Length: 381
Image (cartoon, rainbow, N blue to C red; front, side, top):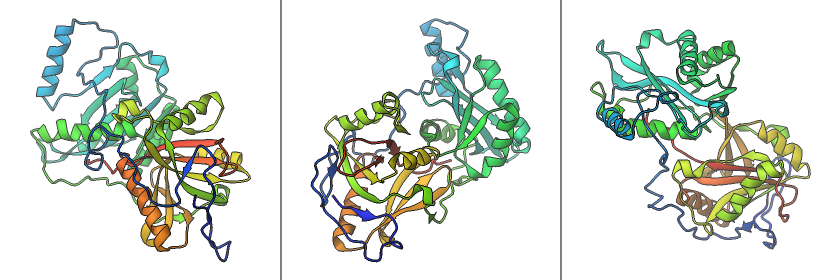
């Protein structure tokens, strides 16, 4: 495996080291080809939501025949102007404690020639789905607060404990509306169900809307700020590019609750990612003598993804909405560049799926922190 110093300013001559792969992690001393885990060509296909169930009226308390429901679905499919208000009747409303929310303009013009705004709300499992259009002259925290309350009232669900959102430009409005309702707002790009749903809505709803404006760019584009130095409490001691069979990744994910390990998982079934158990998933292993405090600090962040900046020989950690840190650096040589390129290629072959593992020792089997990550491009709206 390759082991680098986290901060080259502390070590005058950081060097590449090799160790025997004695743990369950497969360490990469040279580039290797990673088999594709997706049922389609992953380099050309991005994850798609599998469990999307559109509906135009609340089904939380109304039971209809299957034929009537199918006719209603057909009507929604035929009318892109319809709004959604849906709660899976098999879901306990009390179990939905976290929402994902987007409040932004769409590439659609109203009769005044102004861009239409839309509120899109869901939970991670898409058991709750809600959309509502707004004119651009009522966009404020009061409108949003009233809409959040109306979702709760209409679908018979309690107000959530947390609401995640991914647009920094809407932080003031969303934060104010949430605070007034006693909801914790969480700025985070880990709104993967919402992000993929927006992409699907762009293809199936917005482009078919009579007011659709082809070529219209998003009004509130996602930030991609210049990366900052890593805070002292997040600095590890060694790191390595690694791989894990997907079966081992599943074991690590299951240990998040059973072994009280820090970290976060993803619902791959919902995201439409099909992976064979033997498929190798690329990741980054980080070792520290203070592994538990390091994992605890990392757990307080909304860890989104890791990417290699090949031109500057460094790794970038994305957290929250727009936080980007220089997570590690390495000596730029043909060998290290080739390994970094192979790791990025493996991540692309896995549809953006990768992981971060924090350990006390790179040669050990146990993780004290494990985050399953998915690197997605921004939505088209």
